[in-house]
Length: 404
Ligand SMILES: Cc1cc2nc3c(=O)[nH]c(=O)nc-3n(C[C@H](O)[C@H](O)[C@H](O)COP(=O)(O)OP(=O)(O)OC[C@H]3O[C@@H](n4cnc5c(N)ncnc54)[C@H](O)[C@@H]3O)c2cc1C
Image (cartoon, rainbow, N blue to C red; front, top):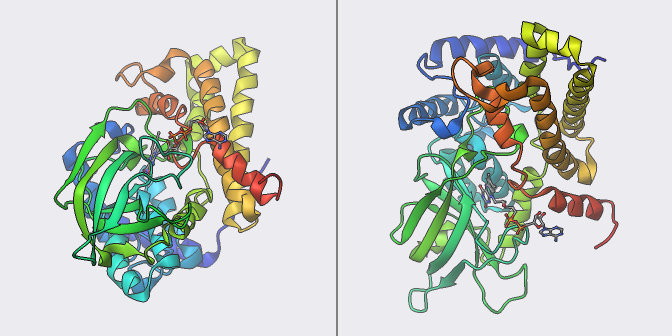
């Protein structure tokens, strides 16, 4: 079976340019980190500095418009993450939520908002957490309880009160929040919401890290470094936070449309071609680890699991190729996301059966591949980030014009 992708001559030449630049500019002391929960403050900021360097060239967001700080590189864009992957790295962690907020700004922001918000974000200078989920508002994201209400006397200010949870990432605070609120207590559902891109350090904001077991969904965490911003989540509290209306994204009351623009990307299956790094390493182990080679010879039922892992991960890859080629239709994104979440836990369990207890440790002499399988096992249980499989199925049904 051949699932390879062919690149054009132009893409391969650009890859060489990227590789030469990385030789010069990638910090030698940026250690590959499997378990991002263990990423030190120092290593975190090395990645942020590296992100700014990429940002100066437009290579942090290579596909975004050049006029706003992206690279405008179209089909060449994928070569940057490909070259980083070869060096055991992925795009620096600052990209996680800017990649979701920036398209919403492009789709719903005014020209002035695009010029003001996008360049700092796309050049790595404004790390922006996405704040939607609340203690009582998850799948039903329209049910916002965090109020942003106009100040009675100083009408150009909003006063924000409420709490968000399961949000953000490592080493707070970021520079900005992309925040969804309820801005009208009377208006109908979906017409009562407003979104903000706002500074994260205003008086009345407090951030409390959460101690969680998983990192993120399997796909995201299987990047070469495993390092993802999702490693730590937080609660964020707003206590009479005063925000000027110039931080509104879109118009007041547009929050639902802005959120849908984000979800189109978040549920869109990433847009890139998925490479399952953990399964690559798993097959390396099955071929080259002498103990495992023997175990597979002696236990044909385990071979069955190995082939299952191969079929699941190649199907995942084919779905991503379909979506990246624009052939997924309205249901392609949720279909890919649902497949990753449901079968991610299935093939992680199959891998554990094949590899045995080595899958569950990151201890030096016992672990395999720097403990990446241990991180992968933990990741595989997280199905909620970006929406649960059930939420994805509802969207698929809608795209098929079945049900509501
Ligand atoms: C690691 C991690 C990272 C996250 N990162 C972020 C972030 O950066 N920003 C952010 O805003 N949020 C984030 N979240 C929150 C995430 O978006 C929510 O957890 C998710 O939307 C589900 O909401 P919930 O946890 O409240 O579950 P609920 O909505 O309470 O759902 C509970 C269960 O009920 C099911 N269910 C709910 N409604 C329906 C329905 N209508 N039909 C069928 N089944 C239904 C769900 O599928 C699920 O199984 C993160 C969560 C995790 C775990």
